[in-house]
Image 1 (cartoon, one colour):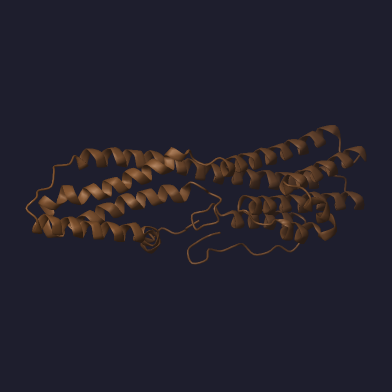
Image 2 (image 1 turned 45 degrees about the vertical axis):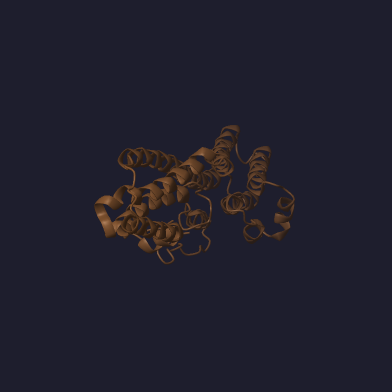
Length: 295
């Protein structure tokens, strides 16, 4: 996620410079055609076309941002549920040696759930993070599962059930912990839905098509009034529409592991810091932005 208030024009240009270069070349050709041939350009309703296109791009960008914000909200819910699970586990389970081991197991597995989910959403291997947190021997039972985050949640549920059978927590406390696990599963399901359900193809194909058609028509409509300045004016207008198109495309997948991504690594680090400190263990430092990007 890009942080800070300063606009990053270099990032925008890096994403649109290729179509912008082609557009500038087309603008020069249209201008040369206007001055060196006897033909006149037909009048085109580009104002009406541009207004309709701007509304279309705005609608697509709003839909993409809604997906991005929902993803961020779901991760916020995961952070809250993780803290609540750690707090409730420490509070409910009896303070004997066996119970303390169970509390550690629950909290470390919850940290592992966050990292496993981050890796799964980004298409990365979560096993190194799981092994780091719960040990290679315990992680071996997770390696064969397709959904490692869900397998870790099942292990936490089994630890809670074992604490209930052992008389360390009562039925109400078990139900409370299970509700927190349900909240975590609901957040995970929402993230997987966003990842596995892209925007409909029409939301991506038609804005790209109409924007490029509009950029082709703009110099034809402007050359009569702008003259030799047509390449400059048309290219600037094209930059505006191409930038709006690029913004909507960047927000479509909030888990793409790009600079526009929801900062999954930073939020996982937040969970890890909070939960390790709840166990009075040494926690890693907070992640800081790298070159203006928080990962």
